[in-house]
Every structure is written in C-alpha cells, then in structure tokens.
Amino acid sequence: MDRNDTPHPALHINTERLKQLQKWAAIAPQSDEEDRYLIQELNNQLKDMVIKVLDPNLDAALEAIEPTNYGVDLTSRCAPMREDAVDSWPDPDALLDKAPRVKDGYFVVPVSKHESL
Image (cartoon, rainbow, N blue to C red; front, side, top):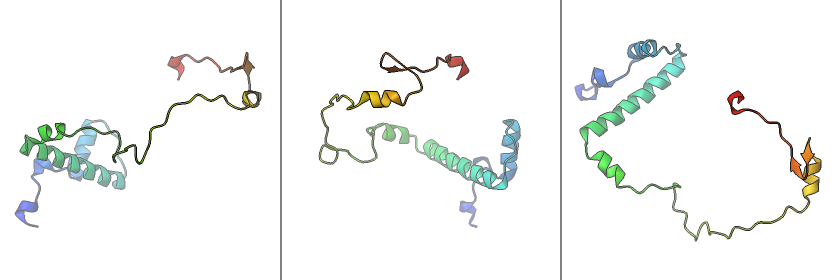
C-alpha cells in the first residue's frame, strides 16, 4: 500500500476504534458482519466530512442546486395533471355491511388516548 493510500488514523475507523466508540456510546456489541458494515458506513461519512472541510465552497455549490420532489423531471408530457373529481362510491352500504360497528352511516372505531399508542 502506498503511503498516500493510508488513511490518517484520526480520519479512519477500525475495529479497535469502533469498540471504543460503542463503549462510550453504551451500544451493545454487534456481530462481526454488523461491525464491518458500521465501520464502512462511518468511514464513508468521515470521507464526506473531510471533503467538505477541504472544499469550503462545497456547501455554497450544493445550496445553488434546486431541490426536487422526484429524481426525474415529471413534466406534463410524462405525468399529465388531471382535475380532481369527487365521485360517490357506487355501493356504500356494501362497505358498511362489512364493518364491525356502524352508526348513522359511519364506521365506529374505538377511542384511544394518544399516550397509549
């Protein structure tokens, strides 16, 4: 391995350092497979942080990118907008007949306090 390929010890998570971090964070020991995955993920995050430190203009460049709701451009050509239309259900009584409890044409559901959820 070339000297330039060796990560700086402060910027690299190995098994020993992971065990130390798990102890400090009071995280229970994981399987070897989970440890390898966590080491890889932490090292990827460290690499991303180093890039941001080395390139202070990166945040400004990322802010210039317009946020999107979709990974692809959904134009009217591929996903045309339609008018919202309210349609009555053809047979509401058939649905209500399947419900365990009904009152005045509505489903009756048990009341639960949100604290118990």
